[in-house]
Image (cartoon, rainbow, N blue to C red; front, side, top):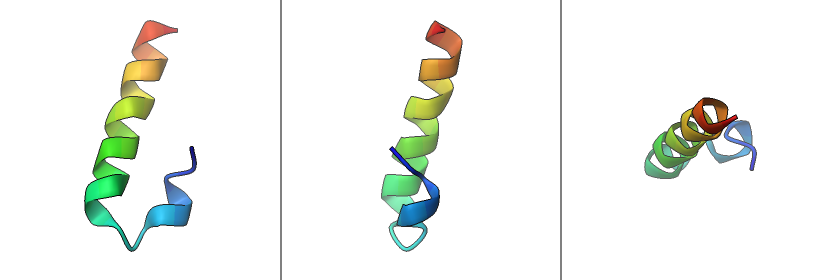
Length: 27
């Protein structure tokens, strides 16, 4: 899932960044 492709959708970008952080934390 690319956060950069969804710059226009701020809410989606925030969710994307959150899920990315979660993914990094999980492994």
